[in-house]
Image (tube, rainbow over all chains, first blue to last red; front, side):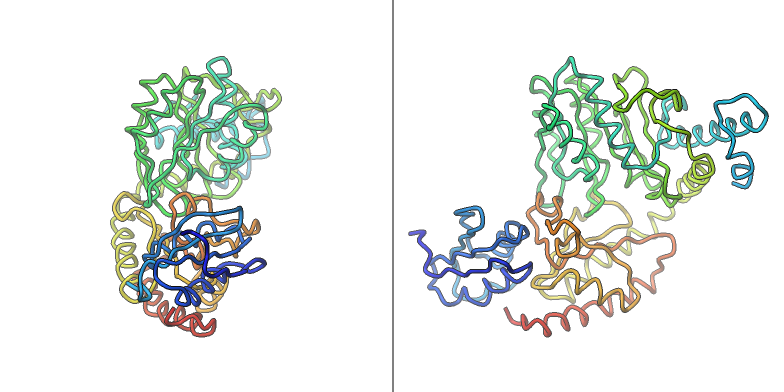
Amino acid sequence: MNEPSLTLDCRGMRCPLPVIHLARRIGEVAVGEVVRVLADDPAARVDIPAWCRMRAHEYLGAADGDAFDVRRARPDQGRA
Amino acid sequence: MLAALDDGWADPGRLYTEARRAGQLLEAARAVVAEVVGARPDEVTFCANGTAAAHAAVLGGLAGRRRAGAVFVHSAVEHSAVLHAAERHVHSGGTAEPVPVDRLGQVSASAFADAVHRPGVALAALMSANHEVGTVQPVAAVAAACAGAGVPLYVDAAQSLGRAPVPAGWSLLTGSARKWGGPPGVGVLVVRTGTRWTAPHPADERERGRAPGAPALPAIVAAAASLRAVSAAADAEAARLSPLVDRIRERVVATVPDVEVVGHPVHRLPNLVTFSCLYVDGEALLHALDARGFAVSSGSSCTSSTLSPSHVLEAMGVLSHGNVRVSLHAGTGEAEVDRFLAELPGIVAGLRATAGVTGL
């Protein structure tokens, strides 16, 4: 069930753009589905899990060196 | 200071009149540092700068304990000077064991104790307080654990010297005059009597063989004078600045949406506060603040030459972009802090509006 429903190619983008793309597009998958972010900016490995924690989505880990999987865990935007 | 400039050309190791005066100035400066760190003067060495002192502490401490093992235990959030020395040690065939920190940037004393009790540990390193997020480390508890394991502890006290006392129990300690408000070009290495330490550089007779080259006497005299002054004022300055840091911590969270204040709220330096703004480019934020007259730093990768995120923020698992580090100093007053707090929400909102990231 961890196959991504949506893959965002953010390679070549610098922080914070990969996180911004993830925030803009996560609403396109159903709750429980997975978005994969491809990002080669080294900050992505820090900022994608941190964003998941701040927005209460589930960070599933880095499938590859630069592929980060996030499960949409809530229907709203999860803003505090 | 003027005496140091008059006689500072002389080699304090020689015997002519000016040289003897230079030697007296050097020893007086050494005595000041020794008193502040709680050491004997002959345990104090002046180095070219804080980075050189940290390199010498790590590599000299490891070399001196080569027969005990080759493992270097250190916190994951040590200054890059310590981590680069650790890299050198690993390239030379040694091992480095980073001890993780929690979300607030603190090591667990028990995890650190477990690490130093493993076989083959030559040296352990724990900073007194973190330079990026201000979190104070449990040095006393870790020093006790190191003593129990028979492992010398190196404390990088660059952030604490002149501001707060450093707990006892260390074998090696370093500091940087620039960080306590003194001139650049003076580092301090303190090697406790009985600590095994072998110079990592070629032999040199200056500074008891612990730092190569002639000491920078005028800068050292200035460094000692400023250390004496800031140490005398440290308690009053901490009492003045710490509530201002509390105010920044509270107001930033209350007035800026999607911001994380990082670092320990209580066990922290009195003068430093760090926060990260979601979706904001750190470099753009720094430039915007600079344009309003606020000189701040950042741990964001976009603002560093390496383009890597801060290893401190990464080890803590906190947001690395949109990062701002505010250091308050003797010249920072309440009015300036309040102006910063009044202007920050609008600056962040403006950057988010320009980037089209509002409401995400």
